[in-house]
Amino acid sequence: MSTYRAPLREMQFVRCELAGINDVAKLPGFEDTPEVLDAPKDPFYAAKLATARFSADHVLNQAQALHHEIVRGSASVMTLTEDQFDLDRQVLVVA
Image (cartoon, rainbow, N blue to C red; front, side, top):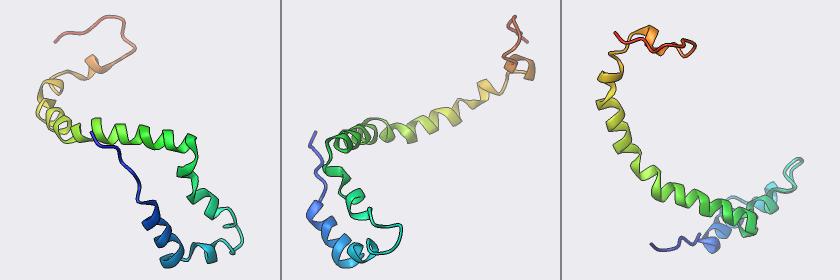
């Protein structure tokens, strides 16, 4: 599996040249904007991105198959009566 590397140079161009982030940072309440956008350079946020990449690579790619299994298998769950869904009951009710 290849390691994802964010296109930081391109992102910097978009932030500074197209979005004008330095001008935005001059507005009241947005003074910290440039530092927040540089967060991926921080080791803590780099670890967060690695975790998100793992989820994207190993969990999200299963979502469509899981959706299909849930929808296709719903008929057996829907055969239960309302009493069988009652979590406060001590005895399992079998119809």
